[in-house]
Image (cartoon, rainbow, N blue to C red; front, side, top):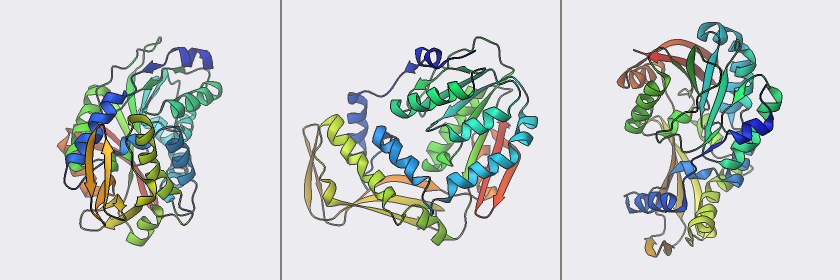
Length: 324
């Protein structure tokens, strides 16, 4: 039996340090257009704000995926089989994971990989209480970088990588292929990955999801600047940037930006960065897919879709991948 204290003692802490964060930010600001890595959204406040986003009436992906898991969890469990080591990339609150773990037959262990220590500790404490028979092996790390997974005490039949929330869509195509290739290596020859993907639909519905009327998404985006000011000593003026999210139909993606509202100079790690009025920094992509485009993407990484479960309104899918 796994207790909360057991799970917390098993924590592997590989959270990026200040030097790593600073280097990533300086690199992004040197690009044209300027960029900030979306993985740094998730400090304690950012994680809490994202949970609020998932409960906004405009934000359909989370509730749609939760409903889909409710409907299909038993069928998914039959397909993937028993005694799995479940590894989740970017675990967040773990709400979806709990539904999946409850449905699986005799899961051996659960390893959430999450960059936000606060979110990781909160979710693992709750899941350890809810699922005491499953060994909890949390890892605080950037899942886009190689991570050595902890070994369960009880041998698993195979690994199941769980990547919900259409988080894969946050990566540009080349980066998505590289991540899928790394997932293929992590899962092993007999392993699997269950990935949630948001499908192309009415652009107005998609844009509304990233521009909620309550302004929670805007606060979430601007919190990235507040985190950088606090953690690496930059001096972004939050009142001088605005959130903007627009759907590009040709590229099938939401493009979220922070737009400078005036000419200004920002200091980051002793360097000056000048912005013109109206200049935008890219902070996140959220790609949407068709069945054909997703199948082509995973094929590029040496994987294939072996099963799918669909929600129709709004369109969303859970896809099971295995090595090709």
